[in-house]
Length: 416
Image (spheres, rainbow, N blue to C red):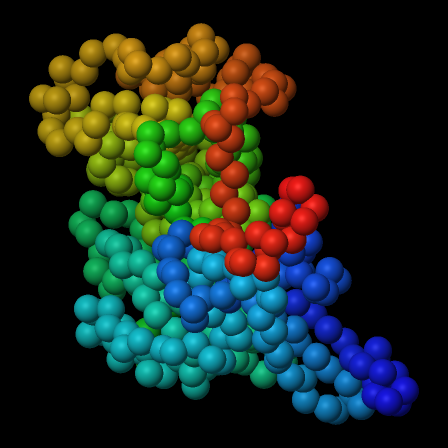
């Protein structure tokens, strides 16, 4: 018995799933406080109920006395019998894969070959104009068992189509993204190539994009103080890429991802261009409708840096009002008929927020706020942490759907 206990003490245990510091409430609900309670994967908002979606933690165990011994993955259910949301079940080797078809014959031929180059495709996460994003398991040699079983990756397969108006290509996107390293930009892991088909392996952000996040709220907008924290993160990302000599040109809610610890990350550099101060302005449409600046829609020459600032203003406006500043403009007549920026009368926005948005969304690019002007604005510099009751929007995954009977009994016993 004592030998067994000694052996257990020499096992290296790791937990999988969300391990952020703010999960103390989850840890406290389990009988083993050193092993944080984890849901069956990293949820991204789709609520799944039922007996098969209980709260579990994943432990990867290795015998430290035998360096050559294989690691094993153990899943132990939480004895509180709570019901939690779940999307990506752990361990990933137990994931039931779906039939994956992107709709692009060129890249559908690459998917069966992915395991041969070290990635096991699990399901489609997103399909857009620039390509299809797959959830995958990294099964390359040299990757630790914990990473293989508990850290999914995203694989972007390009659409293979290039619009005439686009001034960038798949290769440009890879070359640009791979040199960017910032805490608020989706991490580029590697590029993949097989039989002339290319793709990108990227960091997986479990909570989806900012557009989906806002739609989970009935009001579809968030409190100014939370929006300010988000703008600080996005401002840092945009400032970084501009200093690196890159303009994104497609900043929008859909291209801003959210991690488990509520960090925003800019993604999708399919329309990004290399652009530094002094370069000749560009001509032609780029970006998403509703986020494009007036000068671009009027087919005038434009600075992609100014375009990024306008799009960032659209993102901020949407996060604090629940709608785009001018809707999704369709033609030049609508652009020419634009009125000064207005704000919903039913909302009480601070004067400093209105001043910042008016500057960021200036019709004339030369009078539009620069990144430095945004940083030094009163609203951006505000340090107020006051949040009205019910307005704080903490994006935490996984989400508990219902307390278990045992947890209710424990709370009643301790008057919690």
